[in-house]
Figure (cartoon, rainbow, N blue to C red):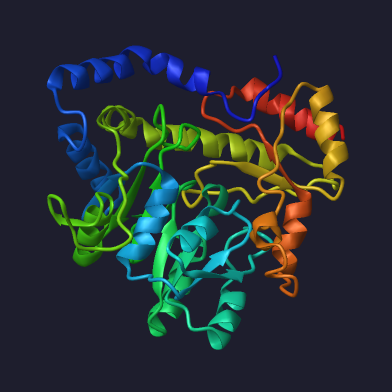
Length: 364
């Protein structure tokens, strides 16, 4: 069988009995929606992130939308967002009936460029920005937040790919005014279905997110806030996530170990690798760059190594925006979209398999 980008069967197989017991416990409990399992996971995940509040929701995109609304992003306001993250942040902005303002990225990290953000803020009045920690690597979060705070711009962290990434002891999700996580099965902490969460230290934002995830209620059947929805983390998924959370740091360490094997041993002038990394990177995706991407992709397939492209179409070039951004140029974003290629990286990948990838890359 070809070596996959990710192997969920290998990942979940050792946990089969543990996770099955979660389903049984929920069935026997009689609590199926917003029950004790959700409350427990919210408490545990808030503590893991180093924040006061966690609000479980149905998926990561809802988490981004509700995080934006929790920091008072309203229809007609503008939100700064990168254009290289597959429309996830942009979709959330549009769901708020707000306007995305696209910001270019750094070439070395593929994360938001502080320099370009500074230029954008000089020309635009932004209500908020979304900092996406792409591929599991923390963005230049401290400098970006300092800049935004000075100008009264709220900051929402998109942590969908960065569960457990840390800078100076602080975890992803604890830097901004609010943050959004996804628990889609392929994430570093993934459920066996969809799920997401908003985390924050802000009492008002937390309360607003809790109300918005359930129709905008301030009391049962009293819809006070517009923009609410039915977006609740399933009780079964919450119980499973609680069982997997203690394993997350170990999984992240193994992902980072594999990534650093690649970065230290791939030696080919046609391939640019990420830097060797520490806790600021949790190896959600290992993305290389090559001017000969298609040829490299076909070469690796001959060695039975599957690859993917994260992500091929920048947001401002997506068909849904046809004609809207014809004059916008994001040179780094556009360049990286043409050269990015993702290699296999998941906790159960063996050293032998990692070296198979290394040797195939070096023979290109």
